[in-house]
Image (cartoon, rainbow, N blue to C red; front, side, top):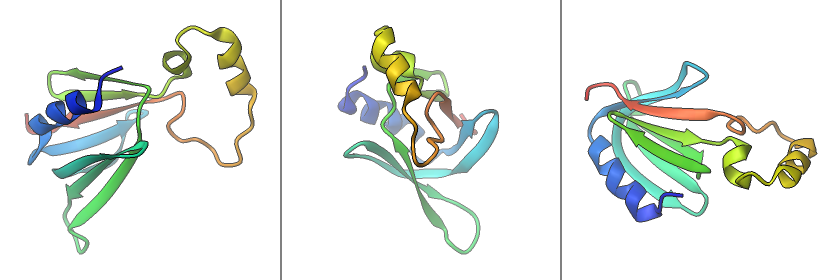
Length: 116
């Protein structure tokens, strides 16, 4: 797992750039990255967007793994990365019924820089 200071250093490369967050090949949020922070269990991004509300806050749960490649950051929420091969615990977690659907669980979100 990548440490919080390492993630913060990597995100410095994305500041003041247009970024896009992609889930299942669909853009879920985009704008110019103004500020980011790590709060409790969330990565918080402040984006500058067109329109009335010029700044929007976008929060992502802290990912199980994070990888950086060229102009993209990959936030992985697959259970195999959380349980590190412990199949028994992974199966039990998948059988648990959640009251509210978990949008990011078993998915990967990509944050890519639109203008390198």
